[in-house]
Image (tube, rainbow, N blue to C red; front, side):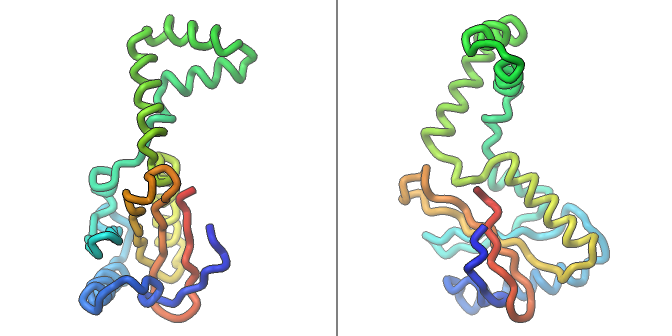
Length: 182
């Protein structure tokens, strides 16, 4: 989160064209007209390289922008539990082999290492679930309705260091630009 960045409404993202600002305004109107939380609510995705803005339904967000869940593989979760219980890393690995099989453990490690190598732009299962919790909470607590906009990290920034930015857009002055992806 970057508390020093303060932005206002839809003008919070200077990259947008007037057509895209009108599109955001349309989706804000739809959001404000909705009487309850549901999977059809929009999440906006902005590809900075192409200045492409698309609306994705909440229920389809994971398909359009798959979160990296490699860290949460059952084999790796269990391995961490064994280590936390005081087992050595070697013993923990062997216990996981007995529980899941060596091939499943190897595949889980390869997926994790591959994700670490590629980078996940800060978009993990945890950050995805946090976006859903925040969106729903904002809706149910009666806060000012705000539209989530994911500004996607550029791939040419080395992958590993660049992170997606989550910006909550609303109407009025002084809304904070809020980053929730680590």
